[in-house]
Length: 295
Image (cartoon, rainbow, N blue to C red):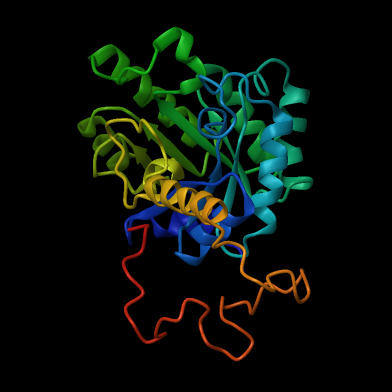
C-alpha cells in the first residue's frame, strides 16, 4: 500500500525519514526494496542522466516520462515529482496543470516546488486542489544564475528570509520541507519550530530526514558534492563489468556455444534463480547478503 503524506508527517520525530532520487523503474524498484520512504523524481536528472550542465534545461515532458516510470515500479514508496524551471510561477492555471499532470497522468503522490515568495500562494492553491506540495528552501538549483551553488542562510538577513518563507509555506499547506546546503544550526532551529518534517541535504544531521541524489549515494557520480556520501562503488563495478564484456567478446569466451537456444523471453525466476530454484550465481542463499546500499 502506497504511503501517504500523512504517513510521512507521522514519522517525524519517530525515526529518520529517507528519500532518494530515482529516474527509472529499475532504480525505483531497488530503492523501494531497501525500504526508502520517498522517491524524488528530481530535475537533477538533467545533471546526472541527460548531460546538461544544470537543471535549467529540464522540461516538463522529461520529468513526466520519468515520473511515470518510477510510479509504475513502486507500490509503497511515496513518489514526489519535481516541477522543473519555469513550469510553475508564470501563470497559475499552467502551474496547476503541470503539477496536476504528475499525479493524474503519471502516478506521482506529490510534487516538489523550489520555493520563494512567489510559490506561497501557489502552494496554497495546489493543496486546496488535493495536490500535496513539498517545499524546498536554501540552495535552490533553479536559481543557479543568481546564487550559484554556495551555502545559503549564512548571514542573519538570509537566515531570517529562509525562516520566514518556511513558516509561510507551512501555513500554505506544504507537507514537508527540503532544506538544502544551509547551516546545520539553522536547519535544527527550523526542524524544532516547524510542525512539518524537514528533509536535509547538506544541512547537517538534525533534520527529520535526509535526501541524496541516488547517483551520489551509490557511488555512480563522477564528481559528487562535498556534502554527499557514497555508500557503494557502482561506477567502479560498472566499469569492471563493461570491461569484462569487452574482453569476453574479443577473446571469444562470450557467447558460449548454444547461447542462442531457448526462449529469448525467459529471464529465469523472479527471485533471480534458475527454474530448479538454485541461484544463478551459484552462491548459498543462506549466506550474508551484504550491507544495504541505503543506510
